[in-house]
Image (cartoon, rainbow, N blue to C red; front, side, top):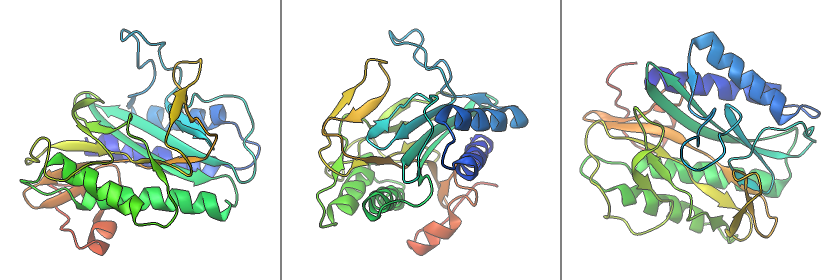
Length: 263
């Protein structure tokens, strides 16, 4: 899973570097597909949904722009200066999955859009820092919510879409909500792997799915951001499997013990 996580991190960096005004999300999806091919990795997303009563997802990335929250399908519309883009991406190496999302701007972002992304990323790391052996999954949920709620602006938190367990399948139990009371849900045990992924809106969190049966947008048209990492909790500390450095720098800032089994 660490190897898969590093492929995810590489794809994020490659796409971010290619994300300039005029590029399309379909072209950015091709950049991510090239990263998979170079690493001999499979896609967690391509054709996902087949057999579940949904149309198979047609790309290796979810590219959600501005008021699109999650599951945006890459398309041929050129991106413009100031667009806010969330990229969700998963890779498979030897049957094991890595899954993470980032939000970035095309050129310079407005202050509101930059703040929205920053607030969402901060809440992700608050959730990561709340994971402790012997704790409960909703300790993470409560930390994510508290991080968002401490801001004066009334940001919205998506409730119908959650983080999840991950391993030999992309989506496994338990769910990891982005809100709720601490001390509930399954116990966090050594080696449990979780994808923590807050989705935050500038306005109302009410969402609707478009006719393509995938793209989820805000009902009020407000912007959204999405940040995600795959983590595990070991007996020696936390390990962020989809961060290039394993999360060592950020965990240190947050006063958390960095504890990979190996790297």
